[in-house]
Image 1: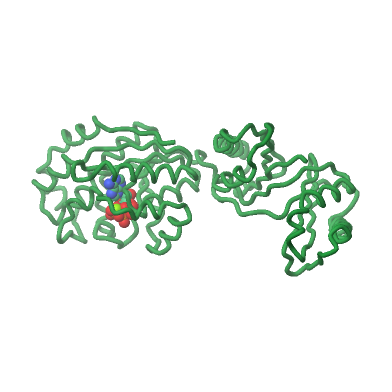
Image 2 (image 1 turned 135 degrees about the vertical axis):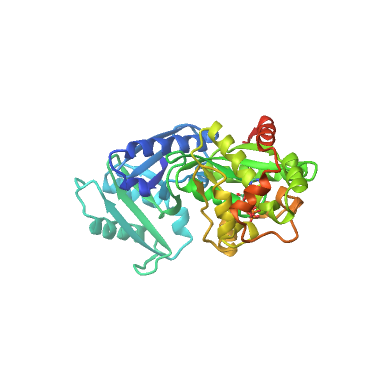
Length: 389
Ligand code: ATP
Ligand code: MG
């Protein structure tokens, strides 16, 4: 029996003339995702992408699991393909769905007929197919209101498709169709969620992490690599740029007022991130900042970090509560890694009383004690780039 996966487009379906660019990128992303499972033939029609295995023995369940994490689809179904002939449809439905039908008591049939040349109309298909299934599976009953299973028949361009309903897709736009951005990735809960959210809006993600050895360990770095790997299930491969931040932090601690330490450090992070982003063709930075969560995330602190770089800074979790952020981090499976108790460069030199309302003039005066040019050049010289996966 021929089987394939039907992928129903989400927002892309609303695009105009440039829809093909989005669809092509989506196909490319799917192909990459399935490459090691076997060969698939992709084709599209009527806001639906068809992923049909060409090679033998492809694990379609695994393919569905992976495609559920590809941004750009509203829904997907594993379906069997059959000729547009009613008898063939009855035979295929009975055979294909037999294992499922054996385990339930109530069902109904839903039909969608986008090929209007098919001689039977949808209500007739539902009635007739329902009757045939009742005859073959006498333990079943039709329940239109609340069935245990909806048998779907879709009569489309190329063929008819039978499946047991659809599952929700990841939504969003295909990764790469909105450009590329650099995510400031700490080891915490918020930044992986921020990266996921922007990838969902079509951005290709690269990540930058600031490490402060020997204050931060190799384990802390590996934790960030694991986060990239986990995010990669949704975002695609994420190159990780690791920046040594120790010298800068020590200089700030030595030469600047303690209460301004965090904000000055964050301004240096933004400056370095912007340089690395520019070198890698990124058009924006992404952070996991959430309003009022900590001292460096007050409005005036954000204003002071914002002016440190010219690039747009995207902060998708700015208006979210910790609880809401955690919910997403559990969904994308980064939570358990994020809460591993390894040290972060931010926590190494946390001031006792950070300023919650810093003033830009004061900060700029304090920063004069630092040789910015030399510090930035030294940090940028030894950026280590790791491609994970
Ligand atoms: P997170 O949970 O993402 O660590 P947080 O609530 O701990 O965030 P901060 O430590 O103030 O908040 O960091 C705010 C944002 O700054 C982070 O979301 C991240 O984008 C960036 N950031 C912080 N530390 C680092 C780091 N060591 N490397 C890269 N980016 C960082
Ligand atoms: Mg943090």
